[in-house]
Length: 339
Ligand SMILES: Cc1cc2nc3c(=O)[nH]c(=O)nc-3n(C[C@H](O)[C@H](O)[C@H](O)COP(=O)(O)O)c2cc1C
Image (cartoon, rainbow, N blue to C red):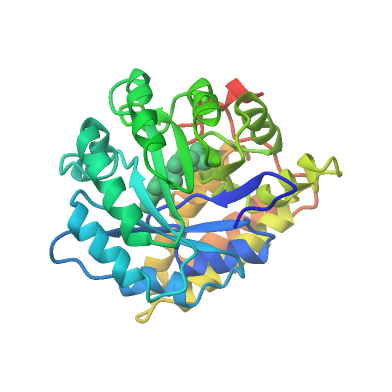
């Protein structure tokens, strides 16, 4: 499933972001090697979410896609794997990282990290339910403290998982701190399966540093790929010592227009102003590192004309776009450990 001659590059699953239109958009700009769906919520009454399922049945990326599950009950999770086995998935991934209180208080996502025995039970059931389908796990390094990772690693090692992705923060650290790359390196040394490093990759340099400090088999990139969909292509070039393609303002403008069209196309009752509000959520990431007024002004636009006028004002040029977001931005901080 992974490329054999270079590090594997995954697009990180991001709820309400990495949906079908986003996958279509990102794949059209080079894209990742592998994809993971937004999570399917699993509980006693759950059924496969038809919208998320379309990322699998209509997978526009021509690359493998893994279905991610979030839940706390081993029996229900195993039942969901049986349902998913009817679809063209390249694997099943268990979410052990979501830090949203509404999720972790139910002992799902990152909340499971407080219950190692339950993880042990779930991994056993899911491994069995997956059969020949690859079974992967996406975890953080602990709930309260990275010291919990030693025990977690022992559990991961005791199950035949096919791949482990590590977002190198604890649940309590959420998204803003440096990542514990020493813990990712520890997993690489300990486990027999490939380990993928995640968190704080914002350009090719941060990606290469994270690979170097951990020896990981690849990277998973989330927010950095919303900001710059060419990041995968840039890292591929950097790892094969080719010239890194530069991104210009106009290329970003083209990306925004494509994202607008693809996401609009999927809405059954299209209301333009509401769609502009959705686009503003992507722009909060895309505008990072550009002139501070760009983010400020885009937050205030109310309709499509204002939205595109503002984008054109800041991006309609052939200059190189800033390679990095600003280090003190709320959305991207902590990455300077890799510079
Ligand atoms: C808006 C948003 C939604 C997310 N949704 C998911 C999700 O559904 N499943 C998951 O495993 N992680 C989810 N994450 C976490 C990311 O996959 C990733 O682990 C995290 O953002 C760190 O990587 P990055 O620094 O490259 O963004 C989400 C993150 C963000 C910002």
